[in-house]
Length: 142
Image (cartoon, rainbow, N blue to C red; front, top):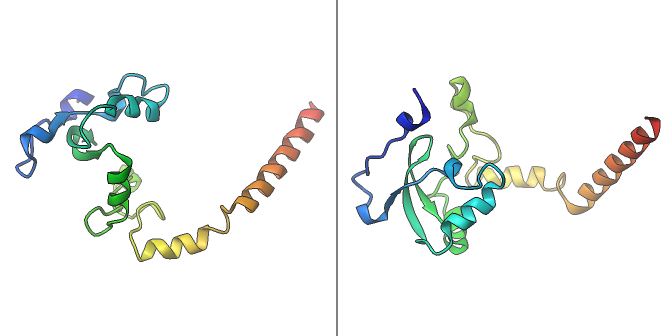
């Protein structure tokens, strides 16, 4: 089965046809070089929201293209859950969440409390300095 045959192009009943369009992130021009820039270029001047046929694992998904809408979606976990966002576990036939990425509130807050100190600016700077020092020593040895 090739990639094209895995794409579902049927518009679901809950989607207004005028909001549906064939769309796959990985086929955007330039996505192989800079996927973020390719998406920004593709969305410029387009609708704020559309249903991308084939955009998520060959099936459809809503695609939000404006910062305000994306922020609103991330802040409404009841309507826009983070669960099944990445689904790496499906690759091995499992169904556990990728934490903390796929955790919704209030569970997500507990993960943030645990992880924030590790990724604090001062800690990152210290870590970067250590890496730089190790790299410098290694380069001098060669």
